[in-house]
Image (cartoon, rainbow over all chains, first blue to last red):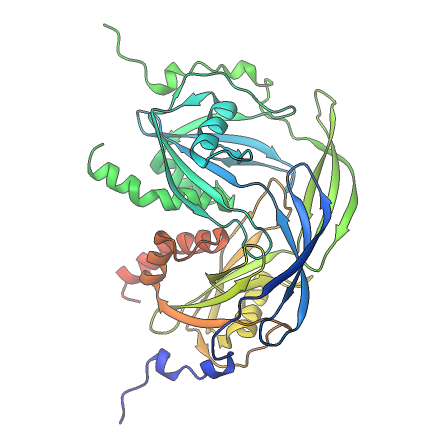
Length: 207
Length: 207
């Protein structure tokens, strides 16, 4: 009896169903502004398929770049913010963050948002990476900044109508909240989980 | 010498700066439609602060509920899809998923999207959780569905102009891609990392 084919060998959806070159990179033909809000522009973008030459319009949100901050205190707690979120009309526990100003680097923006929202400032800051909030309908990234040795050393500068509860918890407790539903914001979850391997290394090194 | 205060004890941003009851839950006064697209409605929503009685308008995206699917083959590979994403104008490696139909459960939607996008069907399906794509500006959730024993057993039903490359990789390799930048979509990252503890348990149990 021949060996049972692996799932991969048995895969009956032939690649030939795809265009030989795989999914195509559509070409942008032009765009027009649908509406502009305080926090993003919404465009309708016309694309053309390079092979089929069909054209289709897609909506694209154009927010500024975003930044999220993992602010680690000297005793290895993470600084958290809790605020009312108007989209889901609920309170959300998150890490500090916000919109980057035009021309501002992620490092500078992260340190600025941390200070403005929480009054914390750090010794050093580094970029852990960047993720795509939603590449299907948004053209921005969310940058993840790690600030070490964050201590309360400045004054809060909330935007009008901003009200933030500031909290801090040991990293492992924050990761547990991320896994048990205490934290639900996908950008915050991604940042925390991408930080986790570095955190495990820091713990192993007794840093 | 007194013990050095912990970071928490030294915290000098008094809670009294906050309203005594913490951040307030704003009341919605009304909303109006700004624009309606194929994949979401965009509303302007007027809120009033319950104490200060100030009023402010916020924009809220209203997409349908979303679902993402972790489809595990019998030999413990995850089914992946790679497609051109119009927001970032780039290819993105993701898990299958999409918009839930009105009245459709997450379980049914997850199995439907898996079948439509990849032709895979599973033995069982379960909900792993739900996350908030962006609670600040969106009112929807992304549900995470785990489908076990997924095998190619149906026919693909792509939307017009949908072109998807279907791939499959061992779970550990997918998690490595999530950590090294090979996967960048925040909703996919969150789903993979929320699945990770269960996966580690499955491996330990030799399931």
